Length: 103
Image (cartoon, rainbow, N blue to C red; front, side, top):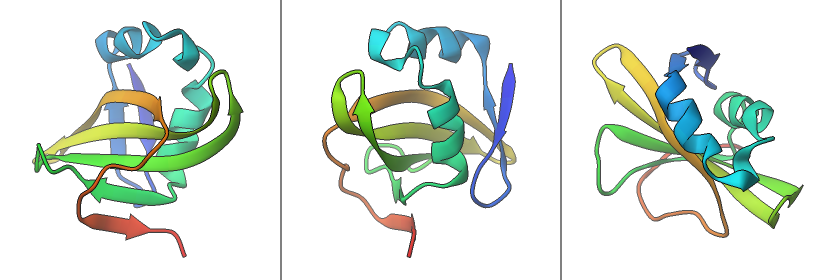
């Protein structure tokens, strides 16, 4: 298991099971450092519309394996436990309430 910190200093777990799930997508194989960076220095954090316990951390990256994309890291928080559900590359930011926005 890996432990990351986010922009608030909150510890976020990445279990081996979730790590393997993320790596099933070939474009994510070299993105572990970017996942850490996205949690620590996101450009935007959105409250998920479908799961109130989930937050979507976004950061834009140029020249990924699939072109210029946002990396979205989905973090679920329950009581004092936060963990990564998934991470993926996307063209757009989902709708939802903005929790945090880099100025």
